[in-house]
Structure formats: structure tokens, C-alpha cells
Length: 88
Image 1 (cartoon, helix red, strand yellow):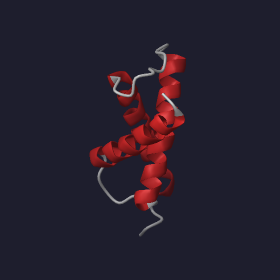
Image 2: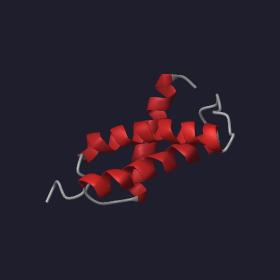
Image 3: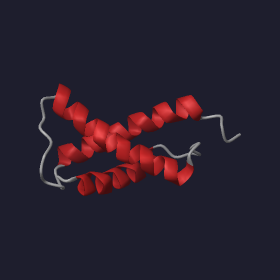
Image 4: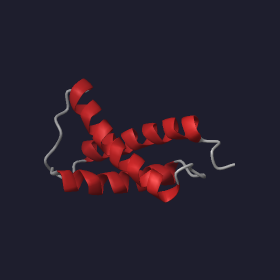
């Protein structure tokens, strides 16, 4: 997949992560979107590095989607832990 595909996947992974973890985020929609994009890169890299699962060249590969959403969820949780009280 190209960089544009990873960005689109990241946008969708961020939306799915936001759906799975509802609530107010410190960064709002833009922050969640950026976390989704970063999460897709991190999830794909971790999947390739530690699970020995090569990154698929097919946009509709289920393992790629799971890795991207998992990466976005992890980054969203870390982001909420670090900056969760900034919108009180």
C-alpha cells in the first residue's frame, strides 16, 4: 500500500477507535484523526516487526485493518492518559 492508502486507513482506524472509546478527547476531531493516522503506522510496523506478519499490499486485508485499529486504540488510550484533563 502507498502512503495515501495508509493515511486513508488511518483516518478510518481513528474513527473506529473513537467509536470504540467514546468520550471527550483533549484534541477533538483533529487530534483523534492524527492519532488514527499515527496508530495505523505504528500498528502496521509492530505487526510486521514482532508478529512477523508482512504488511499487505491489499487495502482490504483484515489483519492490516486490525493492526491499524489496535494501534489507534493504544495511542488514543495513551493520549487520554497523558492529556486527559486538559479540557476540564
